[in-house]
Image (cartoon, rainbow, N blue to C red; front, top):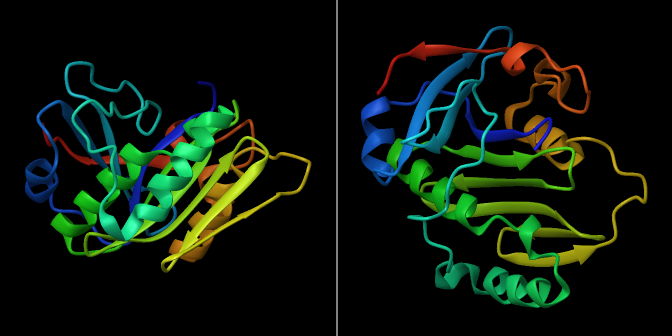
Length: 200
């Protein structure tokens, strides 16, 4: 998965003890701060295989809920429709669940993301354990779940790297996506993030 960025972004420094308590034991994590903009990130990964570079590996969904709660039944139903079309992989249900868990534990909003150069472009915003917004590229469709309303549109024909994540990052943080190197094939080393502390 080239140019993959996978992680969870927030504006306040997360408490590592709360992060650990929220995650299943199969999921490890690291906490990072950005060198030039006031943004923090949580990297999640398989606990038995720590990440060598932050925000660069997929989080295993083995111990994360895939069936979403009743308030997201429309998303569950859409996933089944997309599965029949073979485009459901863009809708990352395990990341939605993980995002909800972390936002509840940390008592702050966060943006969770999975975006690469192989067709995946997903972002969701969680607040206080609930899902406020989901945006995902699913084949030729752009899925948007915003404050309880679900819509599907056709995005621009031209695909650009990290397009969904770039827009959602700027909306969520108020910071330029270019600071992370999003949308470019020459991002800063480790997307400009440095470790806050050793947490595991």
